[in-house]
Length: 336
Figure: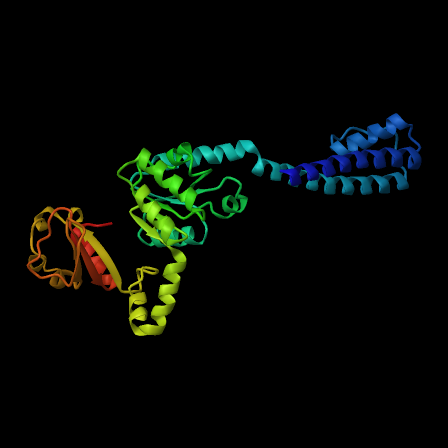
């Protein structure tokens, strides 16, 4: 805004300069008195098309041509400043904000990502591959974020404040991922989100093990320590490189090209599959997918579950398959 103000000052000074140059030129070149010279300058500058005070000689006409060309350049510069002001004006920002608020109000069962740094961006890109509705909360003074990220829903402000989380629809949200660099800020986000929506699932970033324990006590379901994960991954590349490469192939970075691990909950399955054994589902024959894991209603995991394991309420199946096989599975269960 300060840049626009300085440019507006320059445009104003240019207009004054044109008036001074024009008035002086007509006074000395065409020998008009000062008032008539100002009059000629104004009608030339404004292009209203009134008649000349008296016929112009060759020198006066050449000066008029110069003045008109100068006016065109000043006009162009002034219009560019005016257009830039309109684009950045508070009224336009308010219109964009109201549209964003209206869009966010339509979201239900969405995920809120607090902080759009490296971790926040990675989480957003991952969720996009699953076509999840996501709302970003980013600090208000981050102008680069607003300028470069207009293709998704966001709220600007301090996520530790109740009103900002409410604007992001925390009461209707399914999950919150908080990736702020300060553990205390993540703690405030967790406490506030839990207060506004006790059933919300929360994943938080932490800087160390001690902070991770406190964040879990505060209500985070999962806590991630980025540097610990990075160190473990680098060590794994040295100790079990083939295994790590295989696991990377199960990534969901590009779900259309890579082998995928998917999870199918009890509620995702059609009613006719409820309380049926894994064998009776016959997913291998119907879709080509393989059931490699089972999470029971208490949260315990079974790797390579027995075919007689029953799909009961609160349980989840972990499915392995190629993209086309996963697509057939989604069609079978009507999952979008």
